[in-house]
Image (cartoon, rainbow, N blue to C red; front, side, top):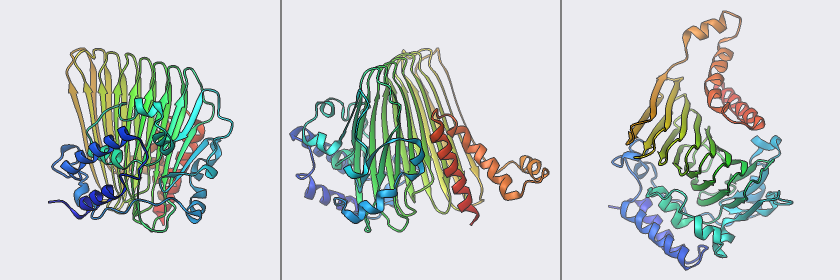
Length: 437
């Protein structure tokens, strides 16, 4: 039996499939992706990877596809990304899933950098899209299939060999409409051999609208390339947000990734990362500060397919009220991927007796010369540390805030860009301030 949401998605795809950008090959790929989704439906708790986030039960209705943003929507979205206003990043802005040139900064691009809207690239059969889209880390995930079927706009970014970007790239995704709708954005970022860049995504919208977001980013990190990727989720209090990162890391390359989440009613951040070259380094970190009845799920798969890979995963969650955090992490070490060093840790700090943290780290190891481990902890604030701070004249609320900031700061401090670190610590302090109210 199909749910009302699944039926609405089928009707929507039938209505818009001919209008979506792309040539015949893209249209065929869309059709195949929707067939895969239609056969499986929205993921539910009997699907192991989704057992803690039952979308079939949680999504009662599928919102209509967002229309092109009007002048009022663009005005509402003008202040989006303000959290990082002081770092001098190059903005690429999308409102209601569509690229907005007047809110973007594409003037005087650095040598070796090219940026284009994905809708334009799809419509013009861009060769980079033809060769890379859907091929970075192939997956049969249902949410990705749905994104592939409906993908409209997004960013297409190429960083040429040995190019070093001094300014961070900031992909700003804002919801500006005054009525609920759904957006499906797809971005592709290719950092060629030896390239260096900081890439930021921020997703935000108003509190009073139950809009829906399905977004995906494919990231290719070439041999010897260094990329820092930060995803900031400050969606509205009623929003549903599902995002996917599919990343491939070349030989002796480095990828540092941080997912920072404070907003959204239901959030699922899923990451699929594959080691494609020997001697690569990966750091995947998460910092979640949630309250009320928020549900935030961070699920990741790290695939060590070649020898000599080094990976560290650290997920920090602070929970208040009746919120729920989910962490599912899997490290796979393929046959022949000797000398792999992979470790994973999930830690939850519960500020309320009604909060719930579900942590499920896993290892699948098919090689014998490796160092791998995982762990998970959940608990309240350390009363001994609180007493120590209070004994030195620090008030209770301030003492709690210091301990919470230190807890999430361990994940945030892994970033290299000082401006981004300061901005995220400021956002954590703002969340703590709202908790006191």
